Image (cartoon, rainbow, N blue to C red; front, side, top):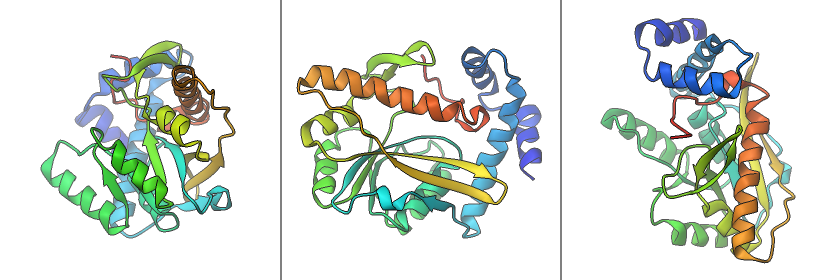
Length: 238
């Protein structure tokens, strides 16, 4: 079924296929962009699994401190399945964009809120995020997409506008830093938390620059383990 869904995207409904192929080739010139069919098929199938009530296996929960943390997450495949699976174990607050399709937006938001997720819009929500951290929640930033008002830092060798919000909160609060990533194995999806023992400079501007750049290196390292699975459909380098 995953192969069929990927084939349909590639040949029948090639939504953003040209952009995805261009991005993939620039980052991985020695790989075949047809790998993307597998990634899109896995992503589409994950929503079927989500509606069927299936969940991903969550690893590294012992690394999540009880008093709250700041976490980097990303589009490593099965984004909503991973997010909803994590929310069964950890109180999560996350910045999310609303899908443009009204029906998809209604369904996804309903599934997310039913799981106990606290959803924040990408704009004008930092005060709510700080309050969530004070309540002991894990505040997840998703910074592997373009942020038009962000700062330019390297991502796969090209400058990419990236939100400084993760770095700003880390500098201000000195809260524990986490990273979480997801991938598909033969038995289903797996999600793993890890601690990010990154130094936080005392100078605010230096901290924002260095931590934002570090966030993109975090994504690069994980994308390289399964390049097909990342969401190449977004214009990250516009």
